[in-house]
Length: 390
Image (cartoon, rainbow, N blue to C red; front, side, top):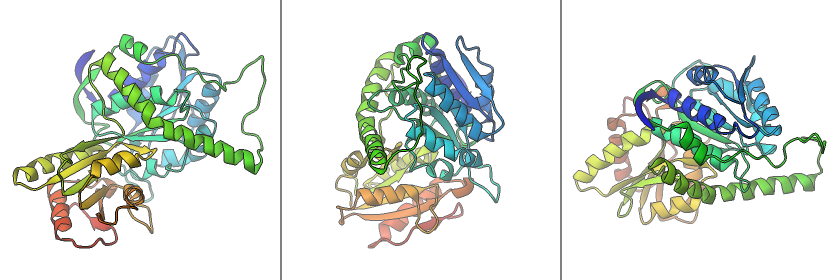
């Protein structure tokens, strides 16, 4: 393992490449690839990697990129890709297909605002519009988190108790193009962590079959029920994978969520990705002033970790959700999930704050203003819009 300065895109590309190479003694690996800002560097990294048994297929669109992953996964290969924003939107049909086919593709989503109007900066609306696809979704706060989560994603996706694809999301430019010190694993370590990819329903020459044909309503219901059971198995599988990850790499990645100073907290703020790092520093400063404030970093969005979140909130009386996304006519998307989780906790005042949409900076001043607003509240209101001038 080597410590080096790396961008988030480099960390992601390194993880995908080593994961693909780790399957060289099985069916190899394959990626459908199409560039879009700000994920292009991931595709460039993968295109320059010398796979023993693998191929990066450069295609004419994001829709085809996922189509390549579907075909390769159905042949038994380990598959992966990356996209952003309107590229994800163009890929939507095949994203849903990959999930319904139960194919363990891993996709890096470099979060970028959907357009028009065109905007290349971070907003989580692109990956979150896939919240009803049969995909797991992770949200990462740092470059190391991106790398570690990408490796965990293959391990969880390919587990036969799950067998579902995974999105690993990071903030466009804030993570993808900045540099941080990262522990880059060796090929030998990744080989030890990732077993051969075995897709039990892959196509077989000696047993021809078809996929995606017509089904009756009862069969569709059973299909969706099976997917739900696999989603429910994902968190236990993730925790097993974290144990083995720690044994091999010497560090323990976060699980479905990460709590900080929540044990005695009266107020808890929930955030994800790089916002959570800023929030952590604010919590530290407010704690020094004697305020009982805690935070939860939301990491796994699908399946949503309801029981883990309830346990982390504990006896807190006020909870704020910081959403860098927006569901028109409703509010923040993470807030909706937290509200559903707290449906049996009428004693908790839950308030949503929409911050940093379209790439606006989320500063300590923003977060302190949110905490002050939450402190004054006796009742919740509709989601509050907090721009970067707050």
